[in-house]
Length: 176
Picture 1 (cartoon, rainbow, N blue to C red):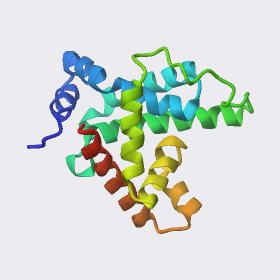
Picture 2: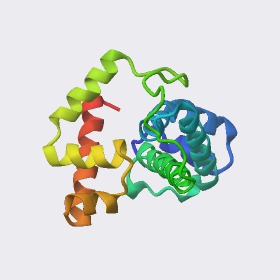
Picture 3: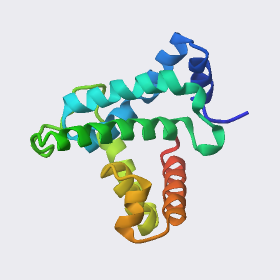
Picture 4: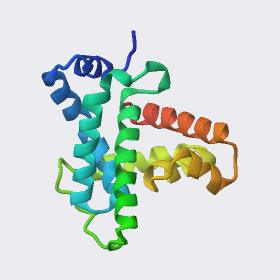
């Protein structure tokens, strides 16, 4: 059995349990929205990515494998890929730059408090430089592991290890 508190909710979701899915959403939506908003920099696009991510999570809940990371990490990767799809869609259509927005004041859910933000920054600073850089490129800049590999000119296994160990350290530091 896993110690991941979201595992039972995801397992029940895989069986079609709507109440479990609602609890899973409640437990994770703020984190997934924050990732989407950070990547897309526009509230309406982040909300679109979040909605699409949860549709995918509902339909693919049975695809989660315990050995591949925590449920939240799996869900964040789905949200990241949805955000990347939106970025690519708008880039192909040559639409306006994502930098002109009001991302600093999200209206969805509750924004991170100064205390929470300070703790996250403290925990990020405590990481090894390589882990911090890899996590920043992957989660804040929206790069895939392969793109981080190319950007840093390092082997894929090294990047994956840095990110995995860095996320584990963050999780311990934030006591998630």
